[in-house]
Amino acid sequence: MVEPIHFPDIELYRGWGEPMRANIEMRGLELISGAIPDGLEGALYRCGADRQYPSGRTDDIFIDGEGQVHMLRFKDNQVDYVVKWVETERYKRQKEARRGLFGGYRNRYTVDESVKDVHLGTANTTAMFHAGHLYALKEDDLPYEIDPETLETIARVDFDGQVTAESLTAHPKVDPITNELLTFSYQAKGDATTDFCFYVFGPNREKVTEIWFNMPYAACVHDFAITKDWVVVPFFPLITDLDVVKQGGPFYQWHPDQPVHVALVPRYGKAEDIRWFKGPTGSAGHMMNAYQDGTKIHLDLCYYEGNCFPFFTTPTGERTKFVPPFLTRMTFDLASNEDGFTTQRLLNIPCEMPRTDDRYQGRPYRYGFAIARGKDASGIARVDHQTGAVDVWNPGEGDGVQEPQFVPRSPDAPEGDGWLLVLVSRVSKNRSDLAILDAQNLAAGPVALLKLPVRVRSTFHGTWVPEETLQSGQYRMSLSSAA
Ligand code: V55
Ligand code: FE
Image (cartoon, rainbow, N blue to C red; front, side):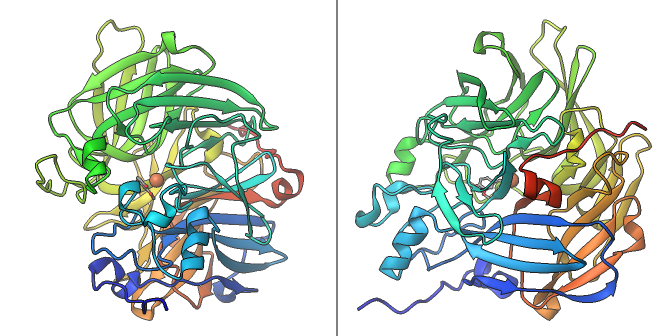
């Protein structure tokens, strides 16, 4: 006998958030308007969290839950939509038990006795394609490899033993020009450890760089940024206290008394050559980009002047007040003997889920894309760092958008010349759309709109893999000669 299934009546699971719990396979989405651009062939892979079974708790948070891989496969003027659960160790154990077994977010002291040695990774955060392999990622575990056509789960992988860290980030940077993978692990030797490891893998997944160092505290390091010679790793004071976790408490607590630390790690160098910077408290989930400018390094990020995750309280249990994220530039001067940095707000509209034309990750760049959440500007936005202009597409009253994906018009198109693929939440219709926008003219509205006759409940991040890359395993993109 197993218990009947009841999800708790909490905000997270009401309305749009109601768990979907399904694999889906839809061949040929209905075209609502416009036309799919010629030559737009490849796959958009995204990951999201759903709930396989109730956890038995009422404090579930949106970043938790079993991972699903979503694929929007563009081929021969049609788009297919396929969703599959990632068959993680945890997913398989719950499927067998026919109930939730894994307790609270990342807390191994709250799991069922029968699974206390099972890896906790949910593979719910992003999809990555590198060296011919597709993966679903969660930052507290190793990658799960996924079949790029069927979305079947192949295995939890450590790159043939090359990764000794216990986890890899869900915000790796795959350089579509060099085919390098830059990635890292934080709390790399287990919960609450301060070990950090930065890795570079070459175009055939061979390890090129491995740099270990210690973080100033057991931080949540959700994202980082890269430049030509450095990687920028910010540490914000969302900190893991192992004693609290052992008592069944939250995995992170917000420490407003602690500064932000930033490590500039030499991309091909050694831990001894890391440069450290410090500033007033604040936090961010996501970086837009970074680049070198003489002796300076600029980091553009969606910055909160406080706690970006209000569901994580202070050590004394206080909830912090909501602060909106603003696109902010932090500048670090390598020539300076001081360890401070400057900050400058780039845009006065709250925004999150920042992206770029990924050929320009780590390089001087002009265009950024994000979800805008301003009173007068909400929807998908493009910011032009050269002119300061903002171009916005609003999907309609009450509707929402998920993180945009830029696709260059051709492998050597000028920066930002191409399309944005956007999942649109048609909240009142209880279904989604896929919008294809001209990335140079968002306000004009979609060049094509395809109907998803189901809710795409929530996806966090994803990646575009061109048809040729699906076939060859390598990206063959270049910077525009016009740039
Ligand atoms: C984040 C997301 C996560 C997570 C920790 O956006 C931090 C930040 C989607 O999962 O586990
Ligand atoms: Fe993220």
